[in-house]
Image (cartoon, rainbow, N blue to C red; front, side):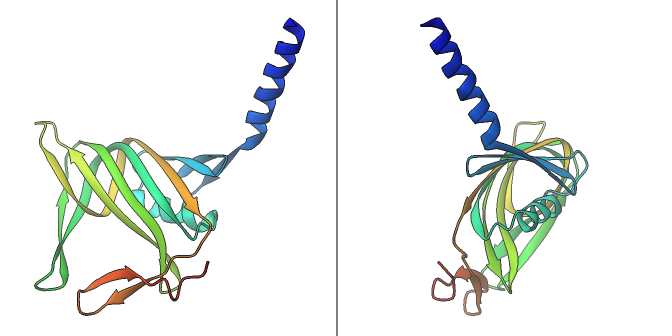
Length: 171
């Protein structure tokens, strides 16, 4: 009985190891486990550049992104509906990335990351907004959940933002 349990355990470990795949790209490393990617972004690297490189290299047409980490420089955006423009503000101090949440889609035939971020400051106040970009300072840990369907966004001129266009999106 012990031998059977040991064989089951060993075969389970082997199958788990076989299902995982390690990957590497420009300023990121990753592991694919089942259909999920676990991504680490290198210290002092751009979050947006690294995630764009990752999405392009893995040919991910759509999906969800979540993440945590630390940064010492982040540019956030806030959309002003009256002007239909973003107002950008850069923060330069060490901050915790308590949450990044967003999605992956396609606009103008290129991958489009739509990311929002919440940052914790040393005085325990928080900043939040649309992420234009941030540099990792410490760790950057992300989970990416791909969807096997292309999702296209198209600019809505009346509102001034990109919206999903499911008629143009391929299943």
